[in-house]
Length: 119
Image (cartoon, rainbow, N blue to C red; front, side):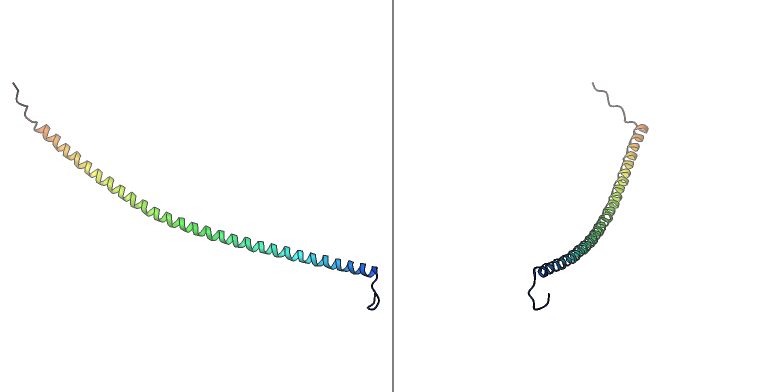
């Protein structure tokens, strides 16, 4: 086929075959590029997701650590308060025992006189 002669069916068929092949090649290249872009985008998304997960995990761990620190301080105070209550209660019981002991001792050493007979 030269530039001045009309195209034959064979020329058109050959042109169609070349155009079809070129379109398939372009299509394959585009599919490859799109697949690569999707894969890369997926990888970036996965990396961002993992990073966000790690940041969330760190924030949660820090929050739990702060909470446990505060809870531990409150527990120590509570234990100290209970210990103080135990000590005070024990001291009061000891004092009561001493008073009862003194009363019993006085009653044993100096019993009260018998009541007068009633007629």
